[in-house]
Image (tube, rainbow, N blue to C red; front, side, top):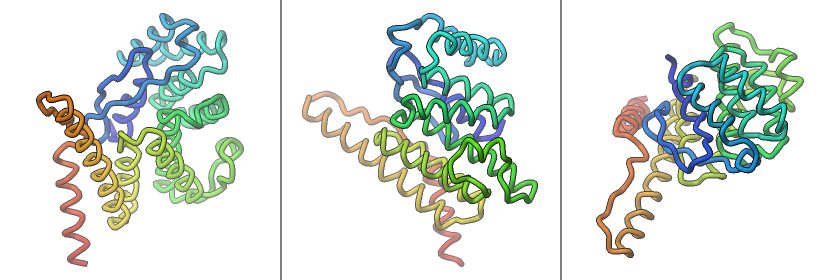
Length: 244
């Protein structure tokens, strides 16, 4: 499974109950919950869709979320999860259509909808690069504003990912995805820059947890926001840049 595909399962954790640790592209992260209309609507049906999705039963999960959206069409959390399912099935144009509807229905201020949007656009961007094409298919450019070229797609994806970090400053996930995207473009300078940004975010979180624990006089337990291999990658990039 590709690294971005693994990350989709992290994005899927828009659950009714608090924080859920999930395996992401570059290690373990915790994603914030999206508490919106499903809390007072049908949490049982919503959770059923989540469980099916985590179990890899994509067709069944799609049916559940479509049913949910028929009843609650403005649920950006349900629509985001539906988009994740479509991405897993390779239906990127359909996924992007649902993500931009989710953005219109409150998802602009939801970090997970923003992360999902960034991932979807990057996947289309990578497909265009593999085919050596520069023009965005009309079915996507008609949904994504001011997005006619592959570089426009990359720019829109970057905007979503940075917005996700701004919305949830305790999670550097958007920075990690950006670093991966720039590394694939062979732009190690930018890749290293965003890995450093992820490091600063993690360091700030660790410092905050330490200070709070010391204030409460409890044993200091600092969460591992970034796994060790991220730092190994960053060190490698910096060595390569020094040699250039």
